[in-house]
Length: 310
Image 1 (cartoon, rainbow, N blue to C red):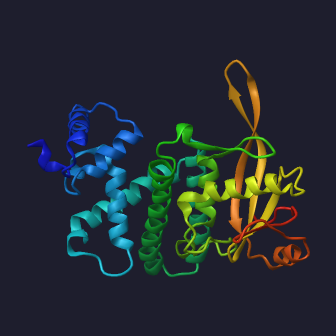
Image 2: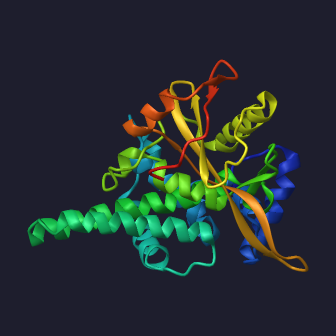
Image 3: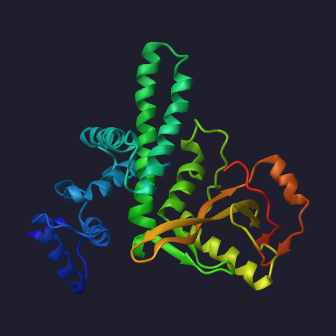
């Protein structure tokens, strides 16, 4: 009977799924990796039975609502599912976006950026009549909340799935550089999905064909070539490493940070603070004055520039 609620898998995976199902029914805690295995193998209908699969149900509903092109009939949302999607937005707004003291620094960044968008939106709606403001405000508030929740899903349930401590350690001539959930939260919330960020027109956004699931690999590529080619970027901390990848210009911002480690005290480390496309004309003009270092067919690295407009 249990096998009817999840997708059939080879025998070696069957025992794992049976075990996870027993633990989920007993409400034993599952790790994020175990939750991923469990929830993605459940049928779409069965996920509603388990609260631990809420984020996966949200992702499914979100994709079904905002996918471009024709949506297969079996993936279209029922009225009850649309109501549930609205509940996902309202719950996120009340319990995440409005909270200003999250223990997770990544969640703190995600909530802070959503509040910034809402504040900008409120300025625009202050000029509208009450009825228009009341209807559109609620709809756009939910849109911001959905995007905020989706970014959280991308970071914790996709990008860093399987990585210890939600981070990647990137070796460089400057020392090990940490790319972590806070790095990614900054990049996703400020420079991702231009179509959803209508209230922050002053920011730059990645182009549609950029592969967001491999951001750290692009950073590794840049830092490794700086070491191989001995490019003169001796002290990048607090400043930008500027490069051209394919047809677009980017700036990578690395800085020093500190963490408390038991037995060692306050330990200094290097962390990726931001990575973003450059579309500021003044900065582009400055780049043109620099000596380029073409290190591969797709990658050119320039002399360091002051970071502006993060």
